[in-house]
Length: 109
View 1 (cartoon, rainbow, N blue to C red):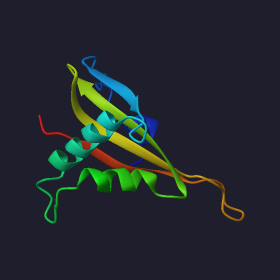
View 2: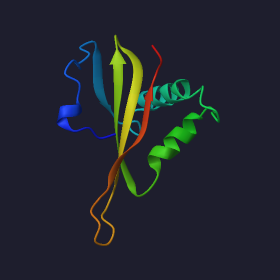
View 3: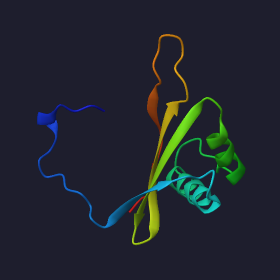
């Protein structure tokens, strides 16, 4: 969703209790486990949900042709959500690198 500056609500404030930490799940197995757990909990009520095995999560990050940038949200040292931004690893033809949000998972309160 894109908003014009005048469409942004004035009362939106930062949640000071939440800490955002950059993660590298292919280098840190604990971060990979955290992402896998959040993903499985966040999407468990989706109509065609099937729990993702840890190996599937790792394989997704190992996919060729893309660079993934991951941030995990922590509340009182408990992981509560994540965002994964993905970027093509090289330009294609006349096209520049492309980036997009490939996954967002947030646990219910």
